[in-house]
Length: 305
Ligand code: NCD
Image (cartoon, rainbow, N blue to C red; front, side):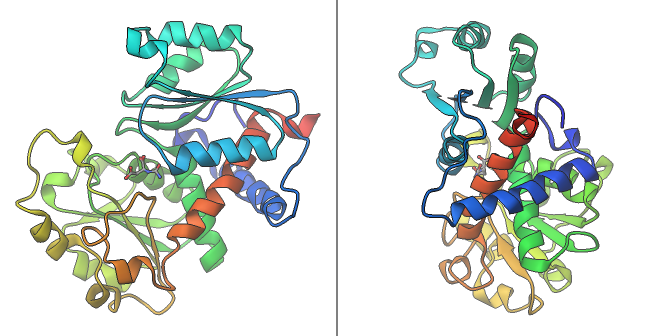
């Protein structure tokens, strides 16, 4: 593996499969009474979060701690960033403190790439604006593989606010690399310009896509990234693109329903679908810890010690 994980495009099929296989081995640790391995003892992992996060931040912290790394959590609120400190000066401070890895979430696309220039350690992209979220794509791929046994040849429908979704971007890349067929589904206003150049197909008609899908991934509408109005009302959105139980009944028997979270119940997904046996939402969170352990382990060279 490279020194950094900035994009899903950093991984070829062999590299991605190595992460998934390593995560599967490390998942056993989670089942133990003492959930710890000594692998990263003496190493320092900094969580640098400039944007809100629940699952990603907590699971990176849990992952680093389960590998015995020292973890420093930095959130922009309450730090000198609020006093106007730049990303570069923050990076130099982390460097001076001897960070071996920096996990960064930032509202600006490309911020992790900038950090990677300034730091000697590894940089892990935990979400940069609407650009990429590679560890989410890895944990999604892991979840699909563990539920359905494979990725190659599967049809994965990614549904909703594609335009603002770093999850959609990273999943389109990674799932394509791993041999799955990705169909992006959403209203025309939330489909990125230039989507024709992505390694995917796309549709505006959810009902037509559902019977073909092995996996449906429901994305949240990212109101916080919207200055304009992209659809008339929430009710109208839910009527066309929400996964309710009537729509879920059109899915193949084996098909699974995923969401990166947070979910807005009643908008992109109905509560009874989110809580159904098809849903992997909670499983994805648990798998996120194993996958992030694997990434930290491989990036920090845990295997070579
Ligand atoms: C996603 C994100 O932050 O990009 N969430 C996550 O990491 N689990 C998607 C979202 O915010 O809707």
